[in-house]
Length: 218
Image (cartoon, rainbow, N blue to C red; front, side, top):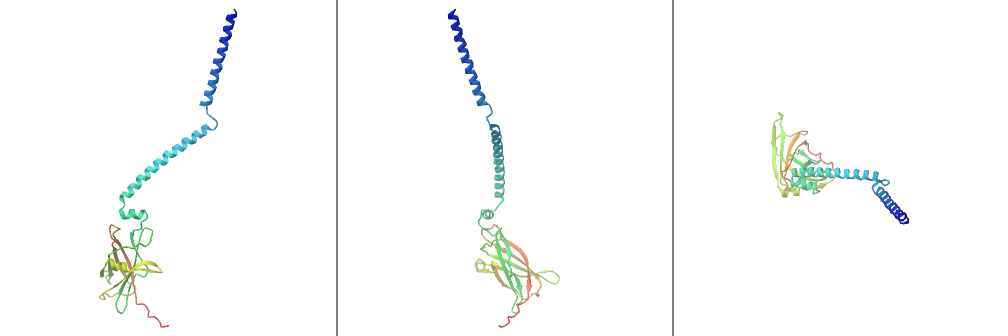
């Protein structure tokens, strides 16, 4: 009888140990698997950030594709300008451009600026083609002349003054057309430069002005 009671006590003790161990394991698992304080909000924030990263990566890929598409349509000169190398892309008329009448002969006075996309003056090499047209009383066009300015003459015409940097061309006009003060003369200019694929062309009108008044002696 004593042997049976001892065996029963041993089994009871072993059973208690097993149950206790199982309970501890269950508690440990619940601690590991259950949500800790703030873990749910942190997980939600992580998911939000991951979604934002995916969105930004997609936007970057789209913009990269747009940039490559734009670059494919740009000329080498335009690409140089976009990356910071100034290249002239237009001709602007500077102040002082006029047809000056004088007793000794009329003169076409052109003041031209070659500029980049930010309106900054950029030197060009030439040569330059200039045409001048006037309109008679019947509003029919009459050519006043065509001029070719070689690269050396174009370079030497560069001037720096109070109104900025510009090219100054003073071209004599023929006397076989009756010009009067207040008329408008149509000018066409084409400036060549190896950095642009086609000559820089511009058409504009300038006024005809009378001779300068004589200076009064001091």
